[in-house]
Structure formats: C-alpha cells, structure tokens
Length: 81
Image (cartoon, rainbow, N blue to C red):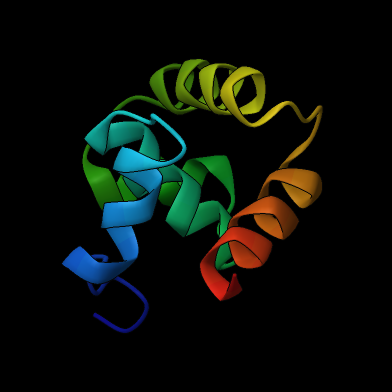
C-alpha cells in the first residue's frame, strides 16, 4: 500500500510536544501535509471523514491557521527549525 506508511516517531514528537497536538491530530496533520484528502486520511486511519474534519478544526486552532495549506506550511516550518 503505497503512501500509507505510518508517520515515524521523530516526526510525531514535535507535533505532540511543541505544538500540543494529540497523537491522532498529529497523524492527521502529517497526512494532510503529504497532500492527502480528508477521504484519503479517513481511509488510511480507519476513521470517519467527519472525524478527520473535526481533527482538522482542532489542528487549525492549535496552529493558529485557517486552512490545510497554512497548516502544512506551519508543520514544515516547525520541522525544519
């Protein structure tokens, strides 16, 4: 299953610690930063699409952004600093 490799622990650590995301929010954030749609993320994680949407709402609030592009940028910027 190409593209469904789980996020590695070093990638999750700053999301869980510095950005205060839950583990599931961090997983969703990583998948959206990889360009996955809500439906794809739901399928990969075995959750409902509405649950993905709710996680995204929480992620956006915690990151102080209003959309997935800004969230992905913030994640990459945080990862490289």
